[in-house]
Image 1 (cartoon, one colour):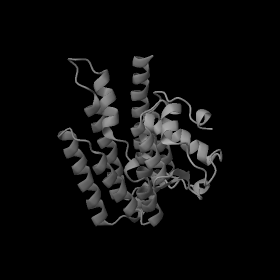
Image 2 (cartoon, rainbow, N blue to C red; image 1 turned 180 degrees about the horizontal axis):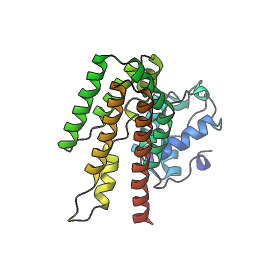
Image 3 (cartoon, one colour; image 1 turned 45 degrees about the vertical axis):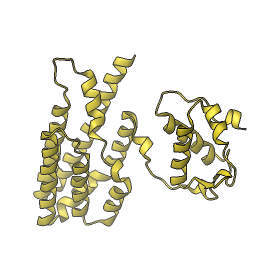
Image 4 (spheres, one colour; image 1 turned 135 degrees about the vertical axis):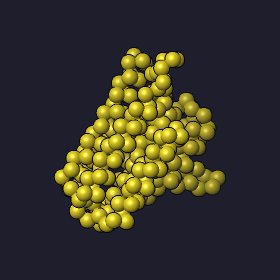
Length: 254
């Protein structure tokens, strides 16, 4: 069974992420049934062509997801409730530009209406929180520091202003995966820039910040239509920024 369960791993994503995906697929499809023992560590090393470290990291991730349990000295087994896994976005699913764009599209379905609700219901102190987050993002950009955490704070402040706990729960559910790491775009920009040409990441980040400010200003004015449109524009542009970086990468690797 171990010989044909796992295919040799390639370079489409990290080896750990690919092994996790293959094992998860086997579990959720029922090929590895609840209670079944996973192939031994050595069998996974041999069939996947990976190191023991990769295998151990993959099993640990599946255990954290509730798909696998381990028994000391015995091995790893499929959890009894593995087939009832709830929806979630995992760290390895935010490792590539393509996957980031998928999450941005998901956010568009929720955050546009969230911004409209925030415009209608916001309180003065909540607007203050939004501007505080904007200032933190700008400071991060000036200091060339990743602004993902401050970016999350801004969107969370908008969710709170919407006065609907489900919006807050959605953002908390996505957590750190809500905002794509800014350095994911930056590393592609640096790779594309010439030796004497500055990487264009600052232009991208300043454009993003301009979009953020338009969202906050519309919410402050209690203009729900403008808030929805500013949010739609921001997320649509974010998708295009990531798509452009992806296209540039493809042009270089083809």
